[in-house]
Image 1 (cartoon, rainbow, N blue to C red):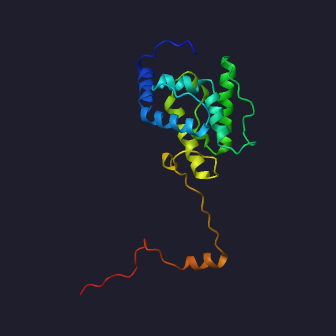
Image 2: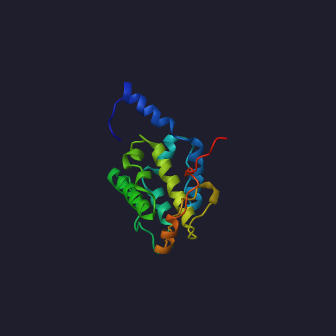
Length: 187
């Protein structure tokens, strides 16, 4: 952990605002999903932000989670070690983040390793896990385990192609939002 003293003034206000975004109910939902998804004998952590952080901090649970979203033999993280060395644990968190991005989680939804490691922004960790769950539900490839209503489905792209003929015909149509040019006469 980093050796940082207490924050004061504006820094403290910002940190408090970040901490207010953490959702304890969402934590319970995510823990239940991770345990169900991994289908291994992963211990259920005690409730609370600090326990949730400790549970995820070594990266093994996160790596098992991302591997469980792939078919057997196609797991992105080949070796998951339960090392107590800080750099190994942070490396596993980074592997999870890269695999999550490859899986389909947007870069803007992914937390930074220090957000989890130092516990500075656990709400960002929750957002990443929610985004991962949403992508897994949307893919509907048979690897997701859990209640589909736990996560929102992501919008799918629906491109349409028009022929030149259709585009030409569309130029002759007056849209409903256009006002008529015919003036009314007063009697």
